[in-house]
Image 1 (cartoon, one colour):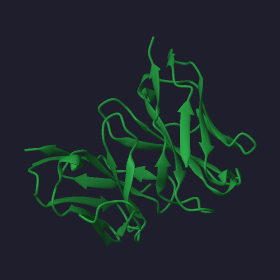
Image 2: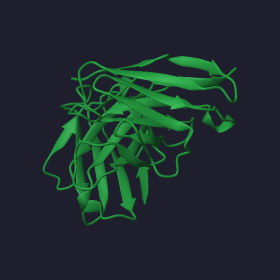
Image 3: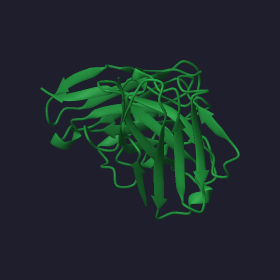
Image 4: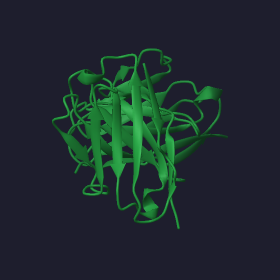
Length: 121
Length: 107
């Protein structure tokens, strides 16, 4: 089981970025997927989760209305579209799988290695 | 939204010490709690799920207990590789959340 994130970059405030997370080694469609971030010197913060069937996505208040999480079953990939980026979105973004099949509310395992997003002028 | 509060935020301990970290939820969450270990530059690692169940491959010196609003993570005999930051996370309802973390440092 492996998750590989990509797409992190340096972007200006107000800009957009799309992160990708490619999954392998498990039946992608039956697991919810999530993003968690860690700002410099701060703790882990849950960002967003999408159910296995793509019928529902959930967001932290801090990103609601600016971030959109979607998944592509054929590519076994989840995408986090981040718009109107702010300096406090600067963080390492981790992709993770909800550990249990067919549930939305759960704990996370495994995790990817993370991708760095820096929002600065 | 359910909030989690972890204490202490940091601690210094020696190899062989027994270490206990507490996580409190702002409302009852049954046993919908997990614990993670996180080291700089690495992916977080699941240690405990459903408040007290040990993830496969995690050493038995790690244990979790509690239900409702108060939970504990215990390391029975701290090893050199255990120096890290530990987080609890609830999965009772959306929005999901992590607590602020406990950094375990070498005394």
